[in-house]
Image (tube, rainbow, N blue to C red; front, side):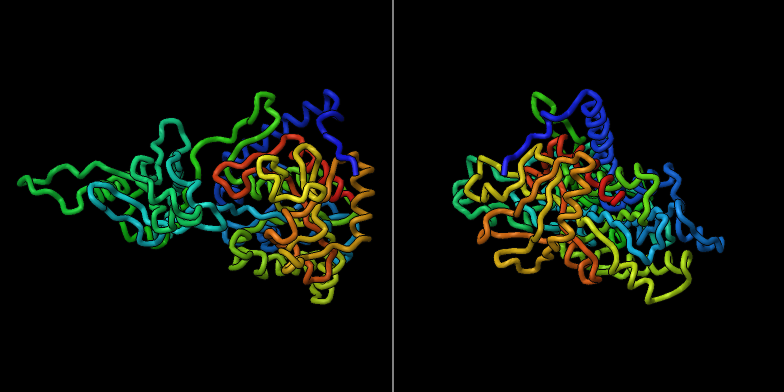
Length: 463
């Protein structure tokens, strides 16, 4: 089938909207570098659009009706928005789902140590990364420190131009003969990913006696002064190491976006934009942003948790009366776009792709009928009838779209949250945006695909 470049179809008005969406998207990438930051940003945007906290509505004893907009949060790392439609919730919802966690490096719970005049934070990487990509570049520290008295200190160091940054060191090329002979998976090992954070010792104490581990002591002094933090407070901290710096236009023509965390925040933020844009629809619309997808969708804030199902039950109780059967009907009758990024065809590594079944930049939002690996292991496989209905809705709305697979059949594969939601019996298909450098510290997307994703998600919510 012929591939059509979306850029050639835009008029001046569409180009203006594309740039506005791209600018908004980049600002969201800058503000949301962790799951907590994404949820905080998403709640703020939802409230500005008239959404109310579902728990507050419940506490007030209010009921809900068509047109009402509510949201719910799970442990500050998972967010779901509902806009009630004309039809009852039990008739099914149109659900946009995406994940807001990204590959990164986490700080351990007993991390601070000194070694030969340098202070480090001990780390553990999160998700599938090429470890060698994370060395010798500026890094930032984001997260929270929660103290025993319940107070929380937000941490963001390395983003402001006046902030210091951090680094994971690499071996100089002059001494790297043995290192260069290693497999790529072993060039930098996990235990070598510790973050360099200090070199200056604490000033000499009275009597000219030097503090033992004086550099570590100086770090603790700085933490105490700025955050009133003791070393033991690392035990109840969640600190994430991410690339420092802002999302940037990429290319001389500014046609692309370079940024950390576009897997899967390019789908999460475009889904959120569409959700906030659509104000009326027959079916209830839902935007579900989840955590932990990169490590198997596990835990209380992953898609395997009962948070979403429980929240739907509360929604049913407030609109149709408490009924387990109606909750089951609502889930089974729903349709979902399980949005996650697709691998964009990269001619520099053409041998890894099957060209006829690859996603290409600027060809629009991408759909994957199935995912999984090799023999479709672990896959959700969407029904042809559902795909046909989607095609009609997208064509009617003038949305550019493409169908693809993740690489050659025997080479590898991947999965999303689609198979989890399909367990309810709902119609689910994988969709998303094509990305170059997936899982690298800096990923690349096409502005045209970001724009088409927003258009596609709007069309889906109106199905």
